[in-house]
Image (cartoon, rainbow, N blue to C red):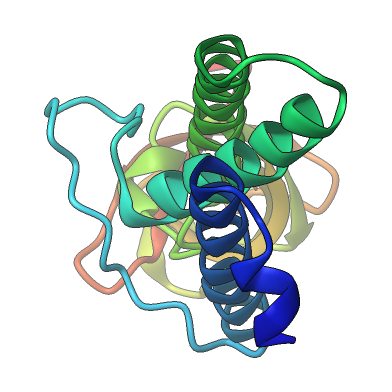
Amino acid sequence: MLDWFYGLTSPEQVFWALAIIASTIFLFILISTFAGGDAETDVNLDGAGFQFFTFKNCVAFFAIFGWVGIACLHQGYGLITSTIIASVCGFIMMGIMAALFYYVNKMSESGTLEYQNAVNATGEVYLEVGKNRSKAGKVQINVQGTLREMTAITDLDTDIKRGTLVKVESVTENGVLIIKPLSL
């Protein structure tokens, strides 16, 4: 194995070393990410959500840089042309990975229900709500993009019957909706 490596030119040795080392690290990152061992180690240098210069992206750059450099040299391109093409491909890979992580993170949500997001939402009474907070009922309401069944009360002097369309006026500290019929 070493005879093969020492038989390469210096530029080929550099490209092969970068390709093998970066690909090994990238494979480790990929496996640990899927195994749930992905720690938030990347630093956001530009203050925005789009992270271009991160550890993962730099590893991807050097992996692509190495493999493309090897391919270009084997195709007969000179060292400068091979380095330029490999650099362009590496930066393209960094951009693709940055965009991928940006959009994946943008799509993910914590899943935690913020009860205040239910204010002014409309829904339908599922279980009758008693007048003047005498009996809690249930409403089906769309909050944060998900249809939920939530506990509700009313301050009205009449019960709110099953099937009545309602609007959320406010939310108590413990997440109980205070509702009124839409027709009021």
